[in-house]
Length: 127
Length: 127
DNA sequence: CTAAGTGTATTGGTCTGCCCATACAATACT
DNA sequence: AGTATTGTATGGGCAGACCAATACACTTAG
Image 1 (tube, chains in turn orange, purple, cyan, brown):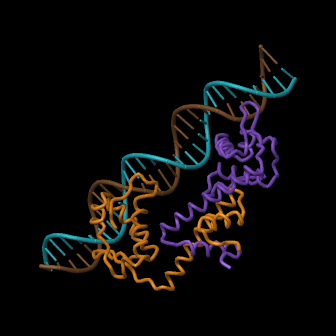
Image 2 (cartoon, rainbow over the protein chains, first blue to last red; image 1 turned 30 degrees about the vertical axis):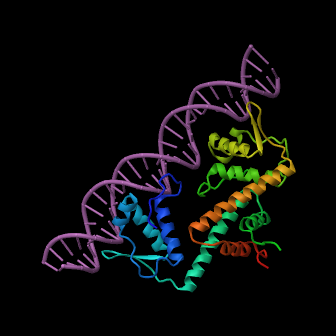
Image 3 (cartoon, rainbow over the protein chains, first blue to last red; image 1 turned 45 degrees about the horizontal axis):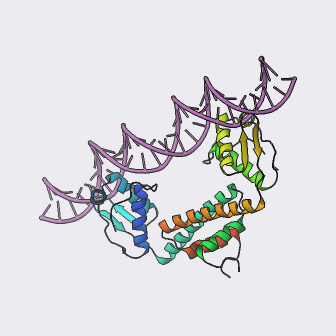
């Protein structure tokens, strides 16, 4: 789960780290209260600067996934189902809004996007 | 149509310019063969460097919306309905794929995205 | 109390995207 | 031809994102 990163990827290192942990928490692989590797440990393991790990942890903290306690460590947070699901919906809304904004800039309308979404997801969208 | 730009926007100036023209072409306000303002004219009008306008025009050229002819000017291209619509579908697919990739990185699944899309568009998505 | 381990803060280097400035090359009009 | 008007090409400055380096402050174990 904390394998080496892809330094050639356009995705920033701190983001790769954050994503891995985020999905692990979302998938239940990391339960509430679990201690994450220390900043230095993980940095050494990933061949990365500690500050980069910190950036990842801070992002996760801002999202409410973990809590950093100085001198103690970084721990997975308890997130209630209700809060979590509303948070996910919020993120989804943000992503969709961004995409719709992009689409508008390109002169695409909603139907074309909805069509593409349904195709990509293999979900019935218009019915 | 060539009003002043929003220099405080996070959207690059060249992109704002390109978008305006792109949507004007898509909406049929600018017909095939129409001459666009010269690089310098538009630059002066928008209080912007000519090179910035060039960047916008080159982007539109790459997308097949306009043709630049040295010494003559920049003109709106003829784009067949079939080619245009397939091009639009392609763009829509690209946008959706990008968003889905982002969603995956955040641990969101397709249903959540589809749900958000339907809400934002006010379109029936699941039915 | 001390030492080892933890997160925190500040700073600087590197790279990329954006915009500008200037000189160049081709076309069109007279 | 000549001149004005057009796009073209190259290089520079600036800001922001990303990552690293180093010194600091707090907590815990012994």
